[in-house]
Image 1: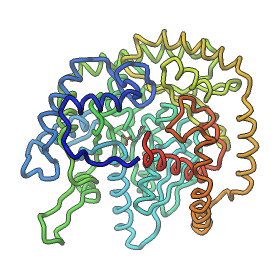
Image 2: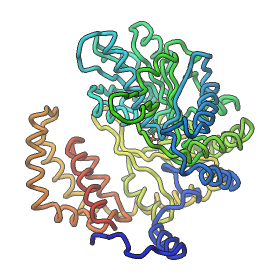
Image 3: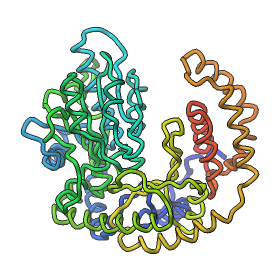
Image 4: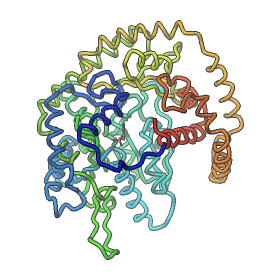
Length: 500
Ligand SMILES: Cc1ncc(COP(=O)(O)O)c(C=O)c1O
């Protein structure tokens, strides 16, 4: 059904009631039951202060900082705080963005332009990174005409294999990426070794500290064994770090830092070629609310060093409890966990385990792994301060869920899926060139218009996402990624188009 603008405006009460209805099935990000993408410190006052700040600035626009100089003041403070956490000197400068992906886009653009301008000829610049790097680099590469080489990691530590990175570097390499930590396993890449390589070959090294930038420095202060990953290492060219993750600020806040002020020239955008006002955009988007900038400013100043140190201490307590509990249940911990821990099992179907935990109200993130790099399926846990009080209850439920999954017989659907995906893999070429992809798209358009509805029905997706997702995860894990990506895109387009 297509919704139309109501002919008569609704009252405030009607609106709030409807919105409450819309959110009825949402997970509660403040509950502490999410180990996924909610970064919850469990501090109520923090939330109120953030809301107040957002209210004050929601309708002010960063786009015209001459009209709203508060944008410049707040951004400078936040960038300065990020810079001091990352041991940056006076030359380090940066930009406030709306998320890690946007910060990464700016870093990739700067690295690409510096590379192409110093080269003076057109080539396809390459990004070399450990396979554990975030998809934001592939996305930036796809938008801006670069190529990404994802390189195997050390199988035991799940950190960058410096030799493998070295071997993948060519004369077209414009950027190397290191993560501190990476999202799938929470392990920290050897930034110093990668920086030495970058210096030797004069390549831009970006450190993705989107997750760790606002928390690892405090964990280090508390005595955790955290290797350096910041501007104290010569050879680090840019760093991204997100307040909206472990600085606990509302969603829509990230910072990109550049080692040299001039590098920001390659990331910023100015346009004086139209008859309108002069455009100078420090970030990707043009109009941006000041709400999340103000909220980030407020939360950073509310917590201060003391607050962040205390919250880091609570994460360490929670993580240690959880890791110990997981080992006792027979799970294997992947690499050295930091604020993220991931575990695997050679016996259990982890996708089903995640569903079983979902029935008990806990949200964990299943991960498909990469079989040909010996990375098995796993479950990812984002650990936040609120988990210190809930770890024992979660582990109790995990014990029952584990026993439940052990008892479940393999479903018929799982067997069918294996046959289906084996056939699919046989008829899909391993490496896809543009022409092949073009043919697949053309076929896909025809197939989906005929069979699309039936595919959604078989997968249980015709009315949105089902509570139990194991079969879907299994399917996505078994299909060749290029095909799985097309299928996933199709499903999401349909669900957003139809609504739920
Ligand atoms: C390591 C890392 N980099 C970048 C990103 C992208 O951040 P965002 O979702 O804010 O765009 C994420 C998101 O989880 C991440 O974990």
